[in-house]
Image 1 (tube, helix red, strand yellow):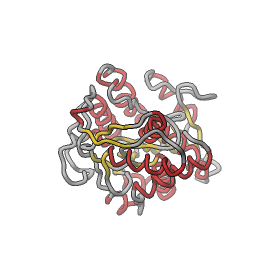
Image 2: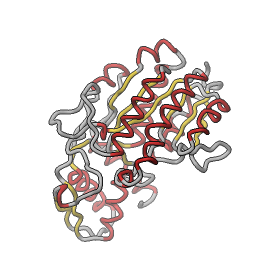
Image 3: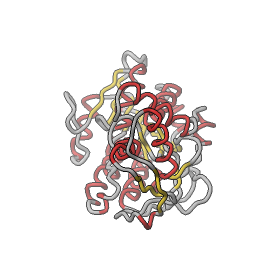
Image 4: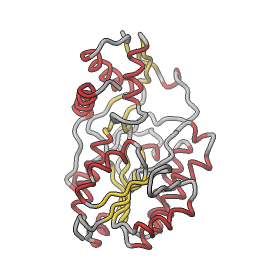
Length: 307
């Protein structure tokens, strides 16, 4: 199918990844992005009965699901809502994809693991989520796999970007307001730019195209994060150091604290580093080091605005 005829349905509205996907996938087909308030198409994953009618109406060749219930702490008080969006909806979306002959790409999370590892998690590591968010995301993965449609799942972590609510934007705001930032230093992961996730997605889908046999061979779970690793404290320090070179800020120091010093309703994995070798071997996709990427993102922000 030519790009001019291929329809690509993106779920997630104006979320960090979905917003970037609208740009990166535009050269591969007609992009139709939907969210709860989008027009002319809208989709609320809390209303599962609306999923199949929308998919049958749009009849996409590809579906990219960047929608999720991501309020990790709030999920502990709203398990039904988290399950509806993260577990039930992906399974129904996969069933709908199979019904219309579409290929599905879905994003998952490092939270499917318990964080007790000391080396990067491979895709075949045994999941053991510690909270509602992680459990519902794992349930969503399993629901997709049961349907038998053509699917790919990309697990990512520590997503940030120039848009939306994320750690980098929060640190930049607080650095203007406070002399000291206290940030957890005993959780490890790889900060990953939403644009790189979208660009990697476009590379993968361009390679697979509309070849059903290729999709079937590639079907499975893959890890997609930046190279390297950091703590939240190291990430915050890098953000503030760059910001200080470009504007006057109040922050004088970034103090390392422990997770116990900053209790949250949901337990965070202490170690969230993911192994990306399978993705590189299968698709030739490997993201650059997070420090290199962070500098690029902040340079872009400083060029156009000061979020």
